[in-house]
Length: 435
Image 1: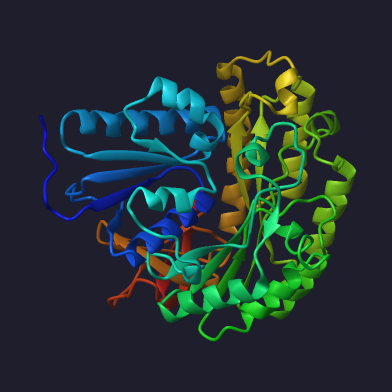
Image 2: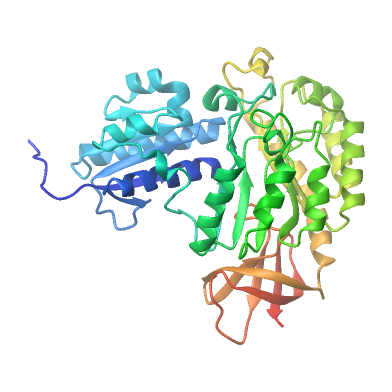
């Protein structure tokens, strides 16, 4: 029988899914550290004895990855290489009873809002005074700032409200103080994230308060870049653009998932917007900020999608020439309203349609990148890899967008901003030399 060692516990947190999950893991780490518990993110040394898996339950592929990760950790426990395995996050919130039955070797499962209960398993207390303090899982020069939790939208394909609940905004003062702490710790770029950014403030201020928050954050000395992720197009508050245009440290970048462009699909998805309204919105955005980078996300293979719908989507891409596009295949999610629709397309057909859309966008991406050759652009240095530096412009977010391959005659520091003359363009990356 294995006996417990007298060594101090060391916890490794494995984070799956989106940046919002990453922030949750960072907050969890901060709470554990404040309780004098040794914690690391995805510990490469493998000298920990406890694992917390922060799961994603958004779509089938994410659920599969989460389950496989749990099983891997349970196997390590069976081999005696771990003492405890805990599971939290969206998958655990949504499928806890099933997981407890199917994988009983996990020591405890927790939902998305049960951090205090999780801490009790470490004989630790939730410290409310630490709100906003985190142990970053990102490089030191950038961080995510989650400005709200949950979502009030009723998109037919989305299970997020089932896992995260209704929209709850965080007070502006709390967010500004958290951002100040991050900047004091060396962060130069902050990415605002939420399930729905533009809804911020309606619950606590009775108005869409994102423009006010942007101005307050832009006033923070030393904060070089502020970036907006996940803006909903319906009833988009145009005041956001006025602030973006007037503040130099707010990136001319907007991540607005549109999901589709065919009116039948938009209606079936319950997106509360039409193709004509999206056309007008995009035209208005670009008229106000001509240099803005627009990123969107699309869904391929939604129930009832026809070839005509796919062609309509490609026409939409050709018309608006988005700078960045991501495509997901539709995932048939229990308890969503779309689950009542017949999912007639095979996974192979969904993936083929997604690839067709991405192939179409690839040519647009190359053309847009070619337009940047010869320009001198401000670039943040993210890392050094294989003897070269890699960074991003203000038009590129972390992991999902283009990178700039930087040639330099001097040593560069990670997190440093440099002026780079773009000399080459690829489908999804740029190359240049430090001026």
